[in-house]
Length: 394
Image 1: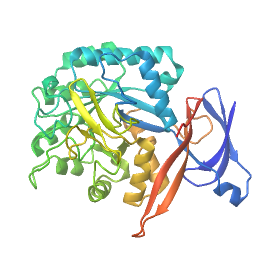
Image 2: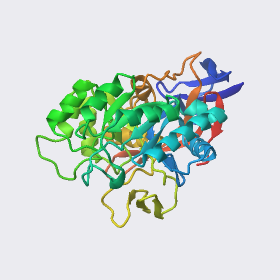
Image 3: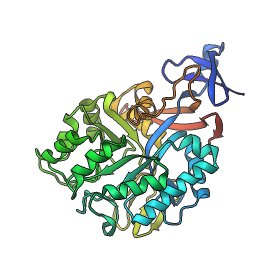
């Protein structure tokens, strides 16, 4: 049995949690003084990120991915406070995607930590726009028309683990693909797209229910009216994910997304790169070369404008969202825990007796800037992943 003493993320109350057999056995008042309570870390339902590409130089889409690689990355995530996730495979060859999915499936079979953490997979591409800008850092040579038969091969390789697919609805066969794949129960998301308003509206009608990292994977300059933003922001059937790392979406747009979609239809994701956690320098994987900059950004090699995934992890995005959108911890935390679980129909984790023990224990370090703004830094202490305790190395 594991016992934790911390402050609830939603009420601030100091509680003592007991965990037994992978579930929360009890939650009782901690019975400590106000001063002692103020010194405790917070505890919240475990962070759940639906778009994570790898870490420490390991990519889930690598054609040489091993089960040991998968476990290393999942352990690194848990040390960053992420207790559940969708390993994400980006645009690459058919063989590499199938290899990555099959390897993740085997890693779940071999490791309880991986099995508890990996509750699905996300395939982002290869059915995306070939146009520079919307394509982002995805390799052009592997971009291709939407193909349901390829999706079925992914599911066979993954043992049915693919739960989320991102595509550009304007690609050949895109709208039919959305309807057919959504009918299987898989969430289909709009992303890396140059689609018109009409095509995006048709995609939503055909079953798309998510917009992938809104504000990224799009043209640098867009028409003022007929663009990829307005139809996604305006339709309440569509939830949107955003990368709130301080680099991918400016504060003004992040606030606009929050006001348009409200907290009911936003998911925070890190989109952490396979080069997350790496020291500054130049790195490459397959046909993609990137620079990890000293300020933490990861960019397409040789320039500083076009980002290539994030170096931040999920908790950092929660802290930035709180500061930028002036939300409560409870509100921001839900966007990276309960909200993705609801959309993806994954059993929710909550601070209730009997709930699955997916928990993140953390501190928030608050700083007042010269202009009076409060900024926060996320400091993970430990994660409970289905009852397994992983302590932070940060």
